[in-house]
Image 1 (tube, rainbow, N blue to C red):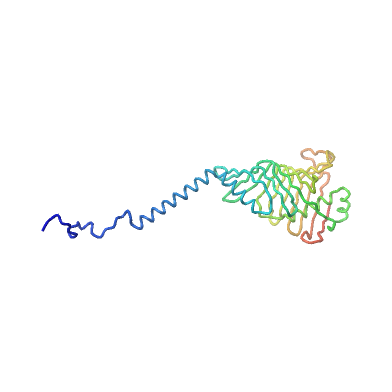
Image 2: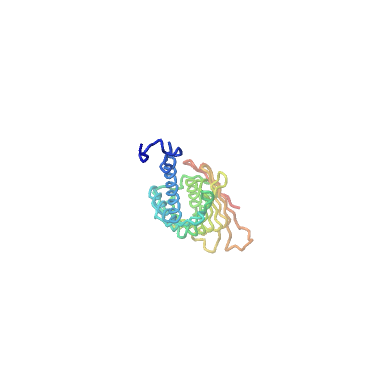
Length: 271
């Protein structure tokens, strides 16, 4: 018999029954997983490198799907992913007490553990819709304040705050907040803060400028706290321009009840 004729039985024992490992199912699955992981890493890297463009597009996409009409602000995210800078934005609201709101400086949003920790903007303006407060009950001092034009501003302001009640939003600070109502400037609030205090939605301004006050009187330490049913307001009045350490000449307080009904009641006190 010729020795060069192939004989399967003559194969080395080490090759009998073996499979090419390069084409085994486990190796193929491993390659697919590796390619998938590398693809995800590339996407994550691209999203990080182009995070500002991605965030700007996502914010614009989200704004376009609400009833509020807003300009599309540029968004910048810090490399540590703990700070978001929002360019000036202008929004119009078809319903609710706020008809329009806009910022005129860069808004800084601080993040912590994937959630918003705080919001700061140097300047903002809001335009409130006119509100009829003739149905609101007030005590005698509240009725007298109508002569000074304070009754509507205080009562309407508390009712607006009740309509916007929320304790879920992060602390918000506005260095200068200008408030208009029905096209007229109502007040300018300096060092304005909004945060949650238990069940209260709290607003505070270190100093308030009101039209017509000039240098005759100064308003300081304006604080309003609101729940869906009741509210509390307190502010200090000084004759002229106060110096550090001066005591207020008058402290005005107002409490509101039945804010969620058609007949809210307000008590105004001064001491």
